[in-house]
Length: 169
Image 1: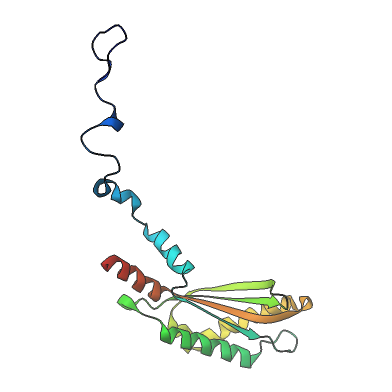
Image 2: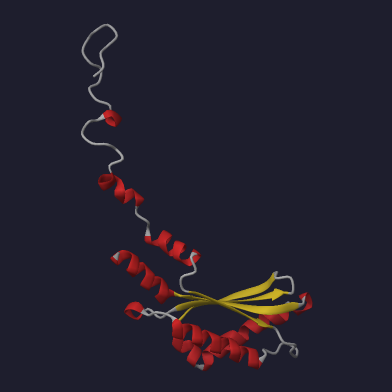
């Protein structure tokens, strides 16, 4: 307690940070402030590489504006293999898929996200068509000497599985 300079009654009785009722760093009380939000946890998992599949392919010489059929088929096959390895908790089987074209020095010339997709897309002509459409962008940058194609696939099922595993622990 504090007293007035002249010795009168106290000006205040207790400062909140000096309270004897409990400490402000009590882990059971303040723990909710330290919990990781789901958004932050997903970011951490992605940075750790959970659910990430990557591959690259050399870009063959092709005719004017044509998508190299063999490369399109190879990319779609890789996507199917990658999806075959992913977990599917609660039926979550979606993937986020993107392609990029780099030059010989590794500089990205063009990129395209094919969005969040369900596996059945890549077991139909639609998957081939989506990948083939990316080569229109590649053709547009042909003067800049494209060298290879890079694919990145993110399994949302793998992320959900890891989130559930962390929640259960």
